[in-house]
Image 1: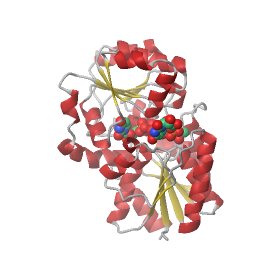
Image 2: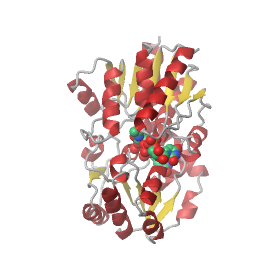
Image 3: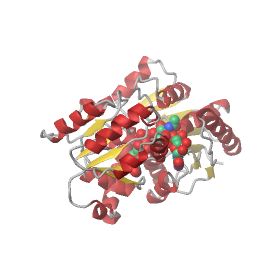
Length: 363
Ligand code: UD1
Ligand code: UDP
């Protein structure tokens, strides 16, 4: 029985919790590590646990439900069982997935306080399941680890009841800690070759589950003026096949489709690319890390990461073919002087959160 449960369920949660787990390990502070199994493919889950040197999860709920309500329900039931067995004094979650919501509800039902890492992000786009998840979890949480002052202000505006700490985002720690390792062991650049490329990822439900939007985005990729490397999320593969778009994209000479890659390979793909095209949240933040520093075209109509846009690292270009192509042309044709500092912190967020958890919350 430990005082602390760290809950994860998807690729970005593992990456962003890792710096906190490492900081806890350095302090010799024990925790129970629980995975919902929401992401189950090796290359979206276990690969990151292995690469980042994390302990094997003490629990894996192996939730395989596809319908979001059933999925969240199974996660609540599974985490309630873990909480009953472990009797923790705190449950930490990170981000805005269904696993985060499910684990937080389970803790709340068992009177266990929730600590929310990456609290206070808001896109104000109510089509996004993540926007609802983060609002609900922020209002359930007793401790809110806001990455920036902007996030803190969002929480204050909504009058959350928990205590707010501004800590930076642990993803910057993850970049700083792992890039030197990536540079010494990843071989991905041998496959990519010396020619310039743009890096793309795409998986948001409001993009890939809508056939018209998905078609607009992939047509922009196919016609783009520079080759694109595209590690493709399994959700997107499934939707491309369902909407009859897979053959066209996979036959395109301009787009190199590859399976999702591990963290070391992805860090190098970011570091060496000319430009990033993505609807990912975490990648918008990582692009601002001093060791990466890349411009991002955000393939969405909103972002919950306005700090990256304001600092000059990102531009929200929408999801229409013409606006994406215009964004690419304009970016490739101008000199961009990116800031040297990330708006998401100094890479010590994991240490800060571990310090607050061990010395203040659970002291
Ligand atoms: C989830 C999160 C999203 C996060 C993303 C990180 C929610 C609502 N969404 O989206 O916020 O940005 O993870 O990548 O929680 N699939 C596989 N193998 C896997 C995982 C998923 O094939 O290991 C396929 C399945 O068909 C599944 C679909 O992808 O039904 C969607 O998976 P799900 O975990 O529900 O959502 P993501 O799109 O991954
Ligand atoms: N990532 C990775 N391999 C890939 C694509 C992404 O390691 O093929 C990493 C990326 O560096 C970032 C995280 O996965 O840390 C982002 O996850 P994703 O885009 O799935 O989720 P989001 O951040 O949008 O919730």
